[in-house]
Amino acid sequence: MAAFELNNLANAEQQSLGPSPRPKEEGIIAFKVYDSCRSQDCLTFEDLGPIRAAECYSVGAECVEEGDIVHPPVGAASVSVDRLSVKKFIIGEKEPCSFNEGYWDIEVKYLFLYRLTFKDADGCPIISIWATSSYNKRVSLFGSVNSDVIIGTDLVTNYGEASAIHADPYVMVEAKGVALSSAILYPSPDNPERPRPTVTVTIGLFSTIKLFRIVTINVPSKGFCIPEECSSVDPLNPCDYFNSLEFPKTLFSPVVKEDFLTNERPGAFKPCGCD
Image (cartoon, rainbow, N blue to C red; front, side):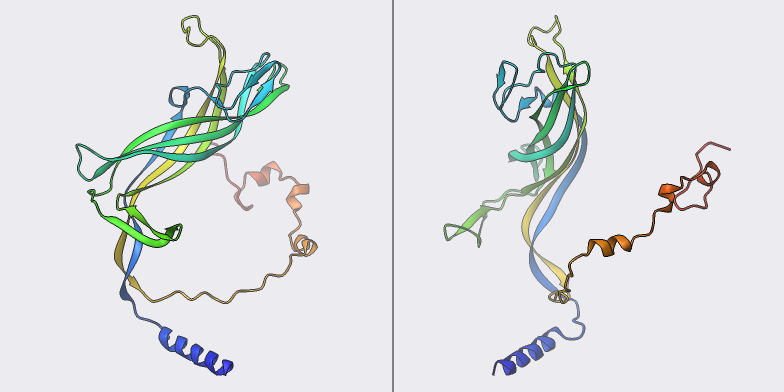
């Protein structure tokens, strides 16, 4: 009986799919991007403000709490920064633009996490700490006019109850941060607000901001996508993999000048501007 049912099921599936279904119009629920922008910002002390400790640490007799401004320890002659990442985003504000209908003013706060390493005059490390900085960015994007519509769905539930969400546009942020430089700022007699040396970092930020809505749209469709059969994965034998590699002859025979300047070897090039 079970074999008969499985056979009927397979035949029904084959008939429903057909050999090559024609494209047809179907309605789908999608995240439609209404507007977007990109930016490439070089962030300095004026943009980031004072660096703050991301963890508690002590150096010498000084104990620094999380959130305190980071000052270089006694004897520090230089500082380096590495392992930078964009820790998270905070959407601080999303309001309809008061003078440009259909546009929304958006404020995004970027939080950076990175490691600082202080060294003395001989280049010996004194201490490495995790620190953080933040940057606020404001943009205006088109998200269409506002409405009082409420969307309800049981795709996301709150203790078993269907969740209701507003029909306002939603914000999506993508970003990549790069640590460019770091330095110790020494106090200036003309600036009494900075009595102690502080630290500054310069961060390169690539970012995109999108404004999207949940909409229902018609799209051309050829039906459902049926996955291919799963292929088995055999355990990798490290010796078989190593023995399959080509022996790196150039590793033991550095290229001579005559061959290096020719275009005959793979990836070779001639220096620009040379005869």
